[in-house]
Structures are given as C-alpha cells and as structure tokens.
Length: 268
Image (cartoon, rainbow, N blue to C red; front, side, top):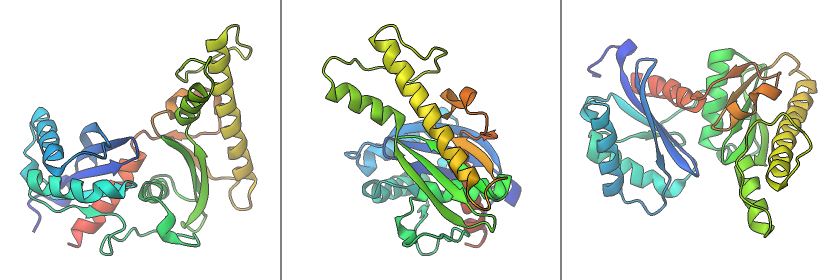
C-alpha cells in the first residue's frame, strides 16, 4: 500500500529525450522540483545514480519516500541504465511507457503504434486531459513535432520537422563562412550583416513555416476549433508571432507522464 494519500502521492516523472533527460518531482499534482541532465549515452547506472542522489539532496528530499517512478523515453540505450540507477537511489523499479503493463489510455491511429515516440503519446494524453479534444500540440525540441488529437480523443498522427537549433547547426557546419548564431525573436526582416541575416532568416522561416502548418491543420475536417498547445524549450521564443497558439505548457510532457503514473500506480 502506498504510504501517502492519492492527493499527495510522490512521483518522479522522467522524460528522456535525445539531448536531455528532464526530471519532475511531484507531490500530488504540484511540481515541487525539476531538473535536467544530459542524455549522455556513455553514462553508467552508477554515475547516474550519484547524479540523482545529488539532485535529491539539493532539494532536501528523501528518494526512498517516492510512491512511484514513471519514464517516457525515446533513447532505448538509456532505459536500463536509468532503471538501474533509480533502483539504486530510490529503491524502486520504474515503470516505462511502452511496457506491457503501463497502459497509456489513449487510442493510437497510427499504422504501427509502436513507431510513435513515448513523448508524443504523453503530450497528446496531457493535452486531451487538460484542454479537451480536438487538440494540436507543437513541441519545439531537438525535433519540432506536431501531434494531433482527434475529436474522439485518439492520437491521430502528426508531423516531424528538423528542430530549429538542429537546422542552425547544420547551416553553420556546411557553410564555412557562416557563424553559429542562436535563435531569438527579431523585429526586422532584412538583416544588415551576416549574423542578423541568419537570425532573421531562421526566426521568420520558423515562425511562418509553423504558422502555415497550424493553418493547414485547422483547415482539416474536424479541427477548426482545436485548441493549440505549445511546449518545448524553444516555444517561448516564437510565441509573440504565433497568435493561434492558445496555451503554453512548458512541462506538458511531464504532466502527461504524471497522469499515467497516477493511473498506473493506483492500480499497482
């Protein structure tokens, strides 16, 4: 039996992405602490265990007081390493989305449902539970993705685009005279030097491209009134020029993992 009431159960939710692992410590529905670690493919379970222990110590939380750990991962190589590290540090074996006993509760209208990344599934689930259906989720991370929830609450599919920073890095690497620049909102369209030209080009191509896809999705049958939710590290840099985005949820993925953790461990 879990030691805490349902309203105060303590869950560690982990989103394992290609670049970073994001950890969220929840008491009930309250996010008490969150932190990021690099998705270093060379990490051992012992190294990751020490990192986890250090983060829990920083937040003055006893890792043995958790009621459950839920992982959404798109980096299979790290799954067992992370599970072993959590067992060492927290004394618990995590549940991993995609495991047979970790039901998502959302139908997936994909030809092969196993191809859908765990992060995209939990984003769709969180959007449906928090904002209703239909919904369109824009996630600006290593890859830029759109995920679509149909009016009947199914994961309908989506789009995958090279991430904005990935495109910028490729441009700098392939063109010897072009420097590395960071994406940032710009008010001008026509740059007056190389850096400002790159910044304007990247920013406005991203904004106009994403706005264009949003308009196309909204014109699809059944999606005219869909709520549009943005998440991911770069989303905040684009919002000022994307008026059709209704909600910004920086921790949408963690919230989706939490929803599944609450369902999974209440039946464990």
